[in-house]
Image 1: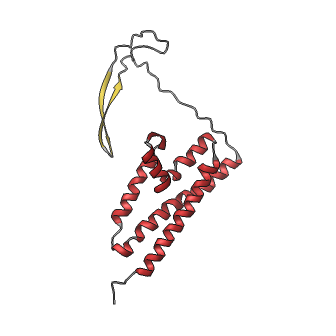
Image 2: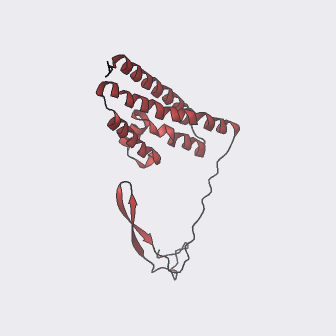
Image 3: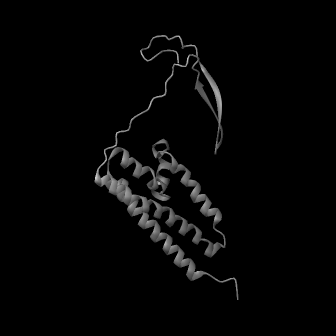
Length: 174
């Protein structure tokens, strides 16, 4: 950093940056890390003010099993494809790789990815939307209500695909 918080030159201004390589699931990523020769940079704790209420706690307790049902519905539907193809591992794996996008705030993605993980393969409702409600308290009807609705829809789709697969199943034995 060339200037301190007040905009004045500090004795620590010639620190510059050093390059570091971070290994991630996507490969290696090179970042620039600011040097701190004088040991003056202090980490800061950011406080998050969450307003807790009985209703918010009830929403959290309610949303956890429904978020799990989203995973269960998607997995049931994708593994049921094996009734027709005799294999479904690759399809299930592909759907679960989309889940990696839901590990991060959806606001960092472009609209295409955001819409896919919200409305097509709705993993965003397993973490982002419930967490957004907890942190902001905004729009519980969408953030919690849609999680419940999508969980029900995903389970119904999973059960329908499973039942159709059972009807078309042909045993390999005699």
